[in-house]
Length: 446
Length: 163
Image (tube, rainbow over all chains, first blue to last red; front, top):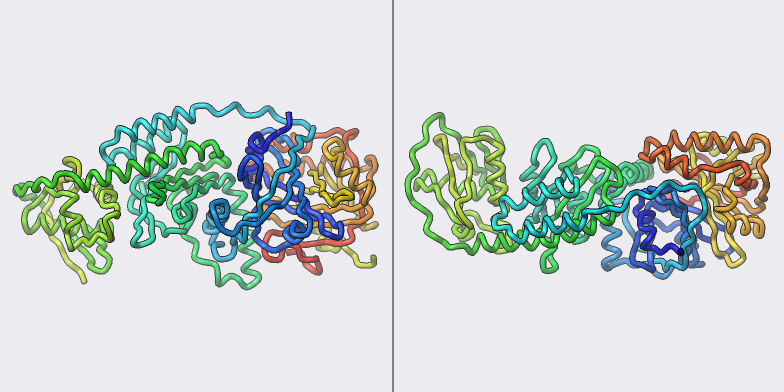
């Protein structure tokens, strides 16, 4: 049977570097490694064009190229005959390959140097399966569709954003064996993403931030496309070689400070899938593993399906919380707590909040917390609604699409992690209760 | 001729744990390529030999017989340092004395180099598995050398130190 591009997708994962042979107009052959032959569709592949080199020069003069591929599981060898068609410098394919490359680059501070110039699209003319000793293929994956169904069912019956995020991450582990995962949502006004839920890390990292466009997560969010790094060690080494060389050639000042991502110290595989709703990215579902080549294109397919429904669910639950009955918050006075007072400090400049000497949170969530504490101290109020927060001028939510419910989740979790003295409990859709177990004082700074 | 291609730098690099692949092309300038199962450097004669499994390299061997053209890339996987050697009058022949031990040593070197990068030993051994009867030698005198380490200088004709 003649192999198809579909049947050799395992070879198109960038696990084993491929070889690309070209021939110059004067008949001199040229051979080079390429880290990924990108699967485009059943009849096309794309190679990354990063530098103007001999391969580039050759295919512009003579479009025929020959690619040598090895299956990372079976060691099966394939020769792919291709013809160069065009270079794409914008559009979906370009953005996807660029993001893949940018993700690698950003991880090692190569963002300014390691740029995709274009996606070179080739038509596949033929695939030859070379004879040779091979290993048995791995057993076919099963259970992916069942896992998608499990998450889908959960999301379809979700009524509370606070619990559904944890529930989804739990199923990723139980059904897909994905032990390290997080959900980040976008703060459009500050061009950042913030973590609202995570699973499988020593510290939850809830409240941690990353700039849009940085790392695999930031780039997935900015480009609105899934980014999968299948061979972390190899691609890291690839970037590091380039970086050392760039430094030697005087490009060092262009290298940005390396931004540490929350997560595994040495991930072998990473996959960031944007949460897309009505054509907009609202956040990112990120998974990783210390194991190399842990996530295949099949895992990506499953997580893209899950992420689409997760994004929609987040938006729907957010709107539901905002639109809930604005029942007047109970104005009953809570019993006065006893003990040493907790000093809450609020800095006006960035709404950062400290409890005692411990940093709690900043930004919108910080402004919300300040309002709650102030209303508690001045009016003795302990019950609040999302709606009044949205209307409160002191909080100044950037716009109606801001993730208010997500900010509350952030605040709830940061308080939980801090200790038992002060916390927030959900009391209904769009309503919550501030529980205070020690006397408070509020210090305004700036 | 006259210019020495296998300089001390090149020879030093080829003593690292480098992997090799080779390409040629047919009369219509359609390229052919295969991964090699080993190589040898003949310093005194300034010649190189790369070894291929014949049944995996039918097109390549036919192209070399017809054109004599070869391009061989030597790469150290853990650093990605790479070097391309080109030749114009390659010849194909059976193994000679000392070739088979070199092929065996190359397989062991591949296990040592690729193992730490995450490749399973069984997989590596499968990639390089062959018998002496299956292997053909491609012998050539390099006529040019090019830096191939990824980066802005990749493809530069080599003069002086390797990148």
